Image 1 (cartoon, rainbow, N blue to C red):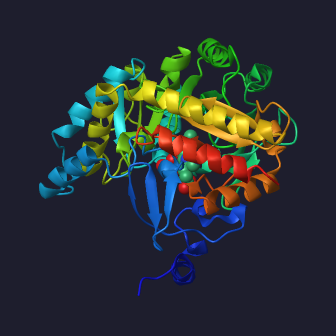
Image 2 (cartoon, rainbow, N blue to C red; image 1 turned 180 degrees about the horizontal axis):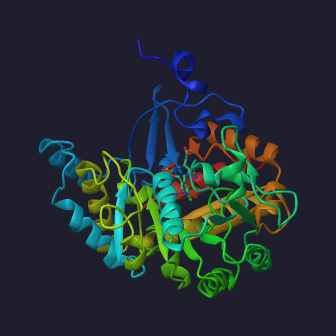
Length: 425
Ligand code: KE4
């Protein structure tokens, strides 16, 4: 007899903290038990009880081509048949690295790792090693993975040092992280003035994707570029979500701003564990074994993961995926807008390409504070009503909706119909 999601969750909770291997999967903020997913194909996922959902989580971004894409499954099988890992260099590593550097002009050299967190942690250590400075500027509400330097809350005043955002993060670590406000260049200038000559790097999600989607204001990214160049601060774009998502060349292509280092993940693994960081040659050459900044990983550059990432990027380049993603995503955005307008519900939609989010508020959402002011209870009710109709949104008001190339117009129409019903109180 097949187990239900609830039975599996009860079993999991006994041996896995919170029953999950990553907190957001626990469905805590929507007050439900998690669904256990057995399989996916194209734009659909199927839970262990056989229910079908149109999937807008897409594994939190990686599955831009949808689930079980035939060419990806074939690439994985072919690679696996040759062996899964050797702890040695394999032919696909230089090939994949060249592919990434050909798509990202700012990336002259790249190092593969196994997650977005590893990519961002390594990029910050590299920037510190390159500049000989200690401090890091990040933005309130930007998430860069669970590295200690990033789990920091903003201090009370804009010039105060960071404070630990999680038990286990030390005061010493927190002191080296300064927190600015997204879309507020003055807050960055104030931190740079107060810590002149001490800041190694500034890391930013060029489009915020972890408090919902918040696009950069006109001139914001260019302003960061100018300030970092003036102060010789390493500008790091965390494109773990936006890389290959908002454009083939990521946000740096879309907005025309060149960072010094870029962090990638998610899509470049095609659903397998991969991260990467890369950038200016003079910085990257500081990395071991060439340079003194240590960084390593048993499974970094794993041949299976790179086979999936390589095939994913090849398909993205071959097919007019981004035109299709744009038209489907625009159709979805307009459908959501119409559904709320018909019922005069206050809901703001922010969208950049095929990532978007719904904010239950009547205010513009352009920074962390305005995102936090949204009605999370309204989102929770909306999420549940959409799920009941077979629409799988992210189980958090502060995550993005992702459209994949496997979605079609029928999926969008079905989603909009469900939205019209779910928007009713
Ligand atoms: P991972 O270590 O989870 O592969 O990547 C960390 C990371 C870094 N940078 C950005 C901009 C990210 O969004 C992430 C991870 N994203 C979350 C959800 N938005 C992953 C989901 C989860 O934590 O389970």
